[in-house]
Image (tube, rainbow, N blue to C red; front, top):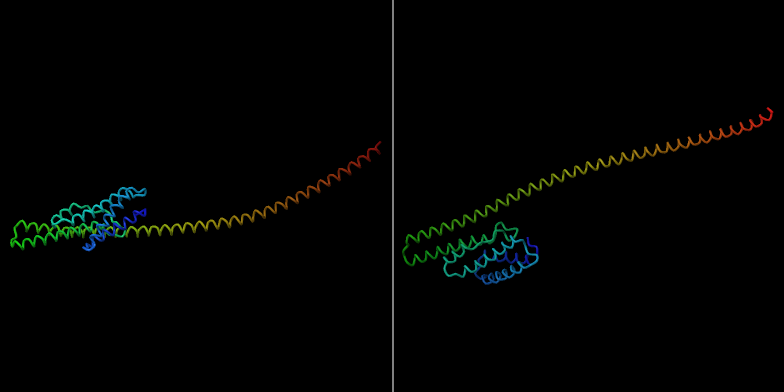
Length: 258
């Protein structure tokens, strides 16, 4: 995924160039050359940038730019055979440029160009044989080889498309499985939270009841303590009075005894 403005612009221009190469419009070849030159300059700047991507991504970018440059250089060759040979040595990118691509666009361009050049070679050989009015055994073997290459290219393209289709189906199944697991975990978490809330509510109610009981017992204890203090005061008062009266009586009794 592009992480800087320079990389975002580079990916957009690269995707545009791959689309133009896939469409193969003659009137747009000069624009494609300009775009590829701009891609090379942007790639050089991206390699020097402080926010450049990881080396694997940067290497894939270089492969795609080199592939487009080699594709343009191969188209400038004179004969279809030279073009086909040059196309064989081209290395397309290994990963899709955009997230929505089912297969790397450069790979599709490579396969399409290979099939087209094979057809051009076939038509060139057929025209040459028609002019000479003789078909040699070597020419027949070459045609069969070209037809076989064309069929192999089509079969390779179908295999790549089927592989990516299978990968997408597998990815969709994994995403559905993850969604189900997430839903089950969410439901389980909600149930646990609900049970914890119920337990907390019950604990708070029990704490309120215990607090009320404690308050009632404290009031009863306080009243009991007050009653005990009152009785103690009265007892002390009675004792003091009794002592005082006893002393008075004692003092009066002793003089009489004398």
